[in-house]
Image 1: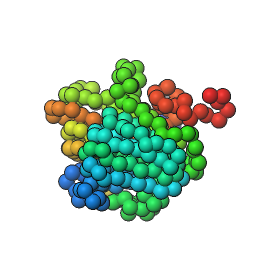
Image 2: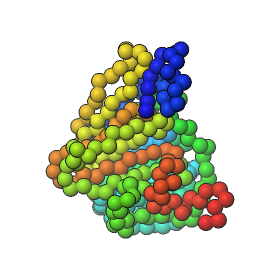
Image 3: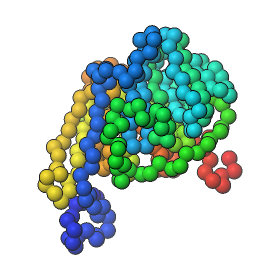
Length: 302
């Protein structure tokens, strides 16, 4: 239970009462197809770059023949291939051809991504990647850090060998498992199972996070993000509920502890991906993370 009591109220000491002392930052919604891209490449590739406090993501509509390159990154990053065919290469590995919806973990160092066909991809970076984060369209939102967001651990020089490609077709949907969750050293993504019909409005899942920002990326279909801001003792802080209808692609950054749930609406394919940083221990503890074996805990002989 979450409660909001003013200073000195005796109920503030009750067990299970988490105080909500100040209003959280508002969520940020980016309807990318309606916004000018942050960069356009030679053949017409368009990219939109959005950040949260601990991570940054770039949604790119790649055009055949264009390429994206990053030099000397200190950590792994993640590439989500939603459609099309791309070639991913690393200074120590590759190239690998990816022609199905996939999650690709790219090692630290320099890498390239080349479009064999038109493709929709998302690249995910931790906030340690200064050369990427500084270009984000909403960089100004994070000139002052949000103290409620869990701190991102210091960079790790992870050197697991090779590019790792996880094809979603190889991951059957399991009723007892949440989505399709993968991680890197600093990031976690949950690519939900494809839906081909609207979400049942009687089966929504409003919830909040105490200390995680959530990035929600829509890759296909229309969605409504339902958002509710917890009350504080100050009436002036209270905000009306929000219901944001978005098409695809879009990005929504949801700060803690905003209550939220996302509803697919309309006909056709719906694809949704959630992003967190650092990786969530609760998801790991449930055994939901499909590549957890690549990241053994200290002392784990595996």
